[in-house]
Structure formats: C-alpha cells, structure tokens
Length: 163
Image 1 (tube, rainbow, N blue to C red):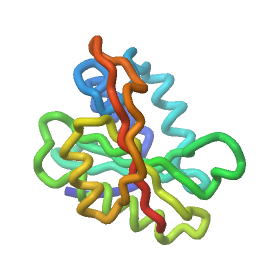
Image 2: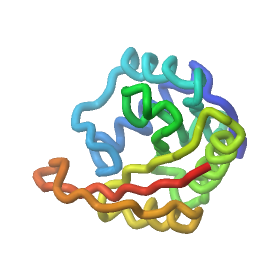
Image 3: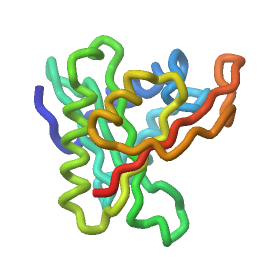
Image 4: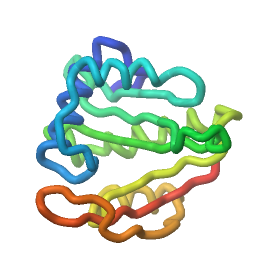
C-alpha cells in the first residue's frame, strides 16, 4: 500500500467511498450523495494552507483517504483542523485507517500552523473511537442526538489531540 497526497484523478474513487457512507453508513451526517463537481470543489480546497488530503492506494487506485479540514470558519480557529478518515468498504479491517491517520497526524505535527486536531465521531462508531483512543486522542464530550439519519437521532463524540 502506498500513501500519498491526493491527485485529481483520485476524486472519482473518493466520491464513491464517501457516497457509499452517505447512503449506507453513519460516519457522515450527509444524507444526499455528493456530485463529482462538489467533490472536485472539496478536493481543490485541500492541500493548500494547513489542510492536507492524502490517499491510500492499492490495486492501482485510491481505496481510502484522510484529510484535515477547517474546524470552523472564524479566523480564531485557523490553527484547529478537523480530521476525517474513510476507507472503501472492500478494504476495511486491514489497518488502512490507522496508517492514514498516523500519516496525516505526522503531517499535522510538521506544520507549525496546526495546533489542535479534532475528530467528530458518530456515537456508536466503536472502531473509530477505539482507533482515536489508541492513538492518544482525548475524549472531550458527547453531544446527544444532534443528527437524524435513517430515522433515528445520533450522538457525536468529540475527540482532540494537541500536536
């Protein structure tokens, strides 16, 4: 497996990974699939400033990705980024999420513009919670029933790492 900075030709694979979670999972609170145009805009908003987007490549294409995105739009939050990690359904349980997370955390540590990495995890996502806790993220609180997906209210678990 290779981990590298995402390239434009990766975007259709990343769109497929994300839209599967939109339609079938709870890792994102998006309900409607994204379009290729929307995902290209998202791609172009990364790998500038302190917002890297990396991919894991196997079998000749991207099978997972991790990115650091703005946590909030107000200027005072500029040194805080939000971590997202997604892996294609056929490539899960192979350690790809861990490798992507470790790689992007190293990028965050090397970037003097980043002070804090935040992860907002859907309540009940034990695999993600376990990974974050193993890597040293601190649980900063639960916000109850803030999203509705598949007809039920979902919590979010907030995790933080100072880099």
